[in-house]
Image (cartoon, rainbow, N blue to C red; front, side, top):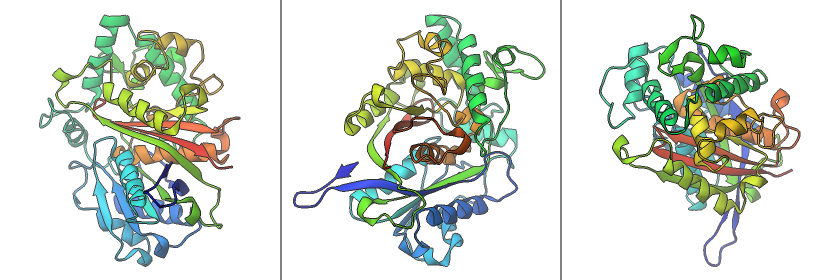
Amino acid sequence: MTAGRPGAREREIVLTGWAHTPFGRQDNTFEQLVTTAANEAIASAGITAADIDEIVLGTFNAGMQPLAFPSSLALQADDGLWGKPATRVENACASGAAAFRTGVHSVLADQARTVLVIGAEKMTDAGAEVVGRALVGADYDSAGRPSRVGFAGLFAEVARAYGERYGDPGDAMARIAAKNHANGLANPWAHLRRDLSYDFCRTVGDDNPMVADPLRRTDCSPVSDGAAAVVVTTADRASASARTAGVRLEGMGQANDFHPASRRDPLAMRGSQAAWRSALDRAGVTVSDLSFIELHDCFTIAELVLYEALGLADPGKGGEHLAAGEFDREGDLPVNVSGGLKSKGHPVGATGVSQLVLSAMQLTGTAGDMQLPVADVAAVHNMGGLAVANYVHVLRGRL
């Protein structure tokens, strides 16, 4: 992505280093997750802490951790970060993408030359009631109510609406769960590295109970701990000592929808549509140019609806494309080759940065067992709430 002022040379925004902790139930504290990701990302970029001009931390928290003022925690990673401006950014489940966009804007505005962006969340040491209440605090209509299932109840309503309009989505949801779990087996950082078959995912039983009808346990992403970080700068400032050539930010889009559910069609996800169109237009690419997509599959019904909302399939036809294998890792357009939130886990503030990190690995040929044969251009979609805050970023490899 380039941007410039009259008389100024246009700048190429690049991700030059990154880091990713394991997702799942972690013994590490929130602070340790943040500092680990920070140090590893700085080293990956081939720079020192003194080279960082600004820090942006994306985290949701909402009462899941007692410390509500975490922006300076990253300074614990290295004394060379002392005095650097550090800001905490929150936008529900899109907090990571929001932090990344904030960091990019600082570089584009000449307020910083090199920015460290961190996404992190520590959720598993809070009880189900605390986590559920925190998560539904991101919903206009449910905020403040007790909940043990968080957003599962809200996305169950989406699944029921889909069934009324297009037919039962249960089989398609099971295929998405099985696909993403199969992909997650190759992801060493994934929370749920389990090979769950389509038949298992479509069957309700003791090992796969109903969470919020019609969402089964296999339709829901897990509560997780974890962190990820990226270093953002301009191409002319990328260190020759970086571990890879990095990736270029080609385009980005953000769009917010109305908060009350009464003002949104849950099957349209109009905010995601708008962010998607903006990012692809700015990048000058179409869907046919994409090597793969990382979508925000907090629940399997979300991935199904997004196929259709983003124009990857006609309304009501996403399940047909899925059944044909189009979105498999061997398909025409792989979706969530990382395992997605469904297998990888969903530590809320870390998710958006994690998606960028794992996409950058694909685009630099460093994704290990996850690596696709062809990975040139990626689109990354992260959303907060039920498609209320929506972010899309398009990345291209610099090999």
